[in-house]
Length: 197
View: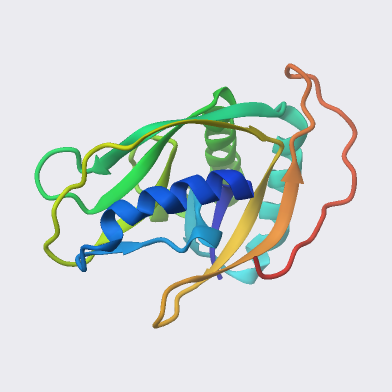
């Protein structure tokens, strides 16, 4: 199973980002991410055996009990890499909980499954962002877009990604509510399951 942890976006934020994607849609070299798939990746795990799933779900619930809901901000767009030929056009995200979630997931996966389980995500520093489009052929950079959007983050998810010829299909395997209250753990309730997104 190809897996990652992510925060998905509310409908109004997806609509605003889809509107911004119109800036690159006229250039054949850019391929936009479908609006219903827009998300912020907390940790990419790559291919994992089914026997890892129970540990990965338990880690999500444990971390959800420790991190409080928070407000996320989207300020503007950028490119990876910033210099030279860009591969990815993204929206920059901010929110005090993103780094805490990403670091907690990385530490938890390292403890449960070992260092090799983190190799799929590389050694890059975590930079919260939402990929808007990927460059598939020569295409120009578009001018920056400024958003000034915010939304409440109250959960994250473990997601399965199936690679298909027309693009990946995402299935949310489980959602993890954020229940922390300034670092104080609260009681866990049964996980909420969701099917194809």
